[in-house]
Length: 361
Image (cartoon, rainbow, N blue to C red):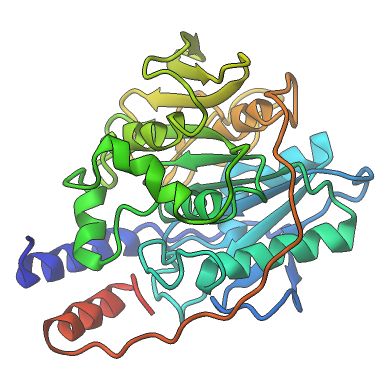
């Protein structure tokens, strides 16, 4: 078990790194969504809806990383640009400083990473409000995110699998593997965690959903020193058995110079893909050159010669080739969050350090 001093040291180091990574977009294309529900996670909602949005259009939910804002991540990744080209709406939940001073989604907090409460329910309520307001297709809702946003993407796919046809996790972590601050740091470094056979059970136990399951796209830099690359393998393992896919990938190919591994279900449909970006550190891989490029390089938005935004959209069938049929969506379910227990002793010291580092509200 990690010592208290070790935990506090890691918090201080992470705060220093995050403080260097804040971005200020040169433009903000987003609008504010209000009145979307009880919002137990106290998140803000930003949106982008193309002027010529077609009837029954898809929705993409985009979750920023620590120190980032919704507008900053959109400026870097280019999701609203792609929405203009291909006719889908974009929802960008945004963390607020009173929840987390470093603007990290609280993916490791049991009260925020569960169905029916906290930040997960806030995001679910935003999705329902957007779908109703713009007559969006409930069977074509997707979610993606970077780092803490990638880990929160895992939370949304696990806790509301019937809502999302697919998800894309960039430099993130599998669902349910951390429920405390020391565990979160250990998992980020690739230490500990459930055995492979337990990973899928974490998702099965997160809701009463029995399938079909969302497709999953996984992206990770091989030189990521913030979130260990082993987390990408764990995410694939977590979803592979749910889809009935074999342990070995169905095929391996090279896309824009990088290996892409693909797993298919029994019907032959591509259900999981995994990109390993050789030599890339912690961030979202971008391809910002060329007439059709989207996005702008900035801290944690990394030029890699491959656009994760465009390839994820293609995997989901939003542009180019379709990637398979999405899952149906039932009616929304609302509930109230549980009260937060009062911490004391060593736990209180850890939580105080976590709040100071901006990782807990």
